Amino acid sequence: NDNPPGPIVVSGAATAVDHAIEAAKARGIRRAIKLPVSAPFHCSMMQPAAEAMAAALASADMMDAAVPVLCNVTAAVETDAGKLRENLVTQVTGRVRWRETLLAAKEAGVSCFVEIGTGKVLSGLVKRTLEEASIVNLDSADDLDSVPHDERLLAGSTGVRCAADADDLLTQQAEAVDEGLGTRRASGDVDVDRNHRVHAFEDVVGLEVGAA
Image 1: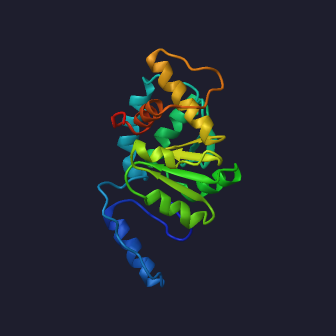
Image 2: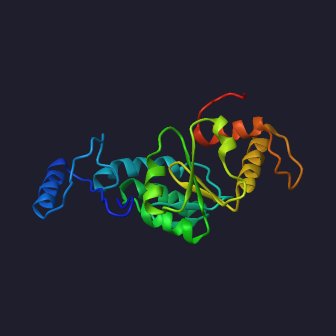
Image 3: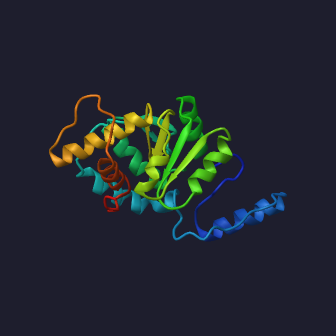
């Protein structure tokens, strides 16, 4: 995996990884360590999981993305449902092109990155790759108020979703909630009330946080 500039993560059989660590140290690399992970993610050993993913997605009703998705397995933007389905399967065994993905986001004009969920691992990787980027961490719905409304926005979990600006993203989230509730908002309305934003956050992270 190509995460921030510098560090590289390799995966595979435990013995092969051990040999890689020994070879790295023998060639003068200062720090080569074995990561405490539960599986050899993003390599060919995950093929059974990829096949299970493909089988699950084959029957899933997927539509073209309304908001472009920047996929870290290709470092490219996709909206086509078929290609997104393919990328979701490929990423199980494919390497993570995170550094290239961030550079592609910057090239597209993204200057603010939002990490959704507990922790700041991805935020740290962003900062090491794009030192000038602004970063927001969303651990709960209350943190939504910290998202700047005057900058381009990148938000992501397993993938990253791009919007022209925060108002656009909030509007799209509200419309998605409205569709589920059977209600509609006035065209062009970006004054998204707190309850809509909370429900939109719940929809993104898959958790029920409740309206404050």
